[in-house]
View 1 (cartoon, rainbow, N blue to C red):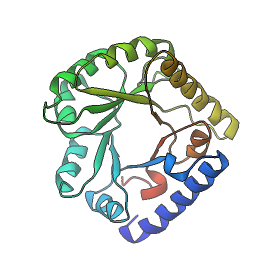
View 2 (cartoon, helix red, strand yellow; view 1 turned 120 degrees about the vertical axis):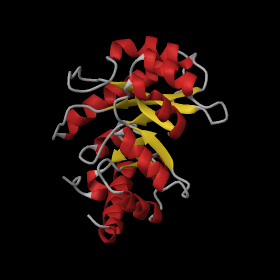
View 3 (spheres, rainbow, N blue to C red; view 1 turned 180 degrees about the horizontal axis):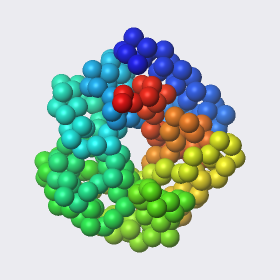
View 4 (tube, helix red, strand yellow; view 1 turned 60 degrees about the vertical axis):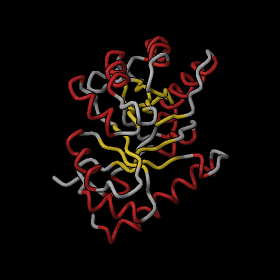
Length: 230
């Protein structure tokens, strides 16, 4: 997809968002659209920024750092949404505003220690492996309360919420069931004293179901930019 097609794609995504939030009885402004740029050139992300998008997600560190550098003149917010390797926490802590895929205390401790003192707190979400899939990162739901308590005590981090990548489902009810589990876990954590305001749930194929279950941030790549270049 080229920049000339991006405006139409973004309009279509925003229309889907508006319909989904209306169906959920929510304001369209209650959901943040995170543009997932994995595999896409910086020029296309620049065009997306020209269309008004401000939040961008990257899964691969070196690719993300190159785009952050290329687009540094723009006021963009960058989220790291890939698996965090312990030997790569320093550049993540130094260059990203959010880490959505935190699932181990060791990684959290490194991010906290390596976040520059002059920078704002690093916003983090705990990734929940809601279905126990071996192919995906994330902490099992039963381990999340203990992890949340430990992360909340660390300096330089702001524990904001939960993130999940559930199994692919085609039926709305099955999609909603996975997201409902994560929302319930968030509610339980808040009842225990946390103040989590973020549910990063839903991608191009299922974000309507996620919004019905309370998603506050949806991660959209294919619906915006088309298939990733080979």
